[in-house]
Amino acid sequence: MNRIQKTINYYNWGGRFLTDPYHLRVQKLNEQEGLKSPKRFDIINYVLDSLKRPTTYLEIGVRNPNDNFNKILATTKYSVDPGIEFAENPVDFKVTSDAFFDGVRNGTFLDVSVRFDVIFIDGLHLAEQVDRDIANALEFLKDDGFVVLHDCNPPTEWHAREEHNYTISPAGQQWNGTTWKGFLKLRYAENVSSCCIDTDWGVGIISKNKNLGSKPSVQNPFYEFKVLDNNRKDQLNLLTFEEFKDKI
Ligand SMILES: C[S@@+](CC[C@H](N)C(=O)[O-])C[C@H]1O[C@@H](n2cnc3c(N)ncnc32)[C@H](O)[C@@H]1O
Image (cartoon, rainbow, N blue to C red):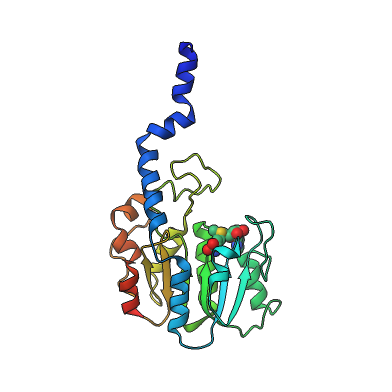
């Protein structure tokens, strides 16, 4: 092998992935997060069960329903997904979340009086969309219901990248997007309480009538990842599942 070929091999992506400290650290964090439990469906089923009545569940962003939707134990379930990531897309409403909520508002989908016990937001993981999904979900949530959000606690800024398809980042296929920013914005709001369970990439919970803990005391007006990273407990109200159970 000549010198030029050796240099090319040394700098090829595979070689870098094996030795680059960022890639190695992020791989470890990926493995650690994957091992955490409970999973999002355990938490959703727990909050549904806590209501002690027949329940109505809505999932925004479903992909393969076997991963979460089919595991949910609610009396009535509705699913929304425009079908971007899973060709079969076996959902009730094959539209974006914005189109779905508009349709509920004007009576095209479901009855205008419908109110949900639990709404799981796991659609487009970009802050502006998450912000709208939260506002819409709160409008159609029962007063004692829960909004649950996936991907609120990205382990690194590579997980919190805006571009989903850039898979040679140290986070590889893992993508939490900028959901955390939409969730953090909500955390400063006056009329709701929120926390994030430290498992399965951060399971955010929002309640209109339960006290789930303190609002952030550290300001993060520019939504800097470093501020989140250095103050996760404060920014997200990061709780264990056991701590969360004591609050509801
Ligand atoms: C992370 S996957 C959902 C995973 C699933 N909830 C689970 O727990 O396994 C995100 C899904 O959101 C869908 N999606 C993308 N943009 C959307 C939008 N604007 N409204 C609703 N869903 C959207 C994608 O098609 C994809 O299936």
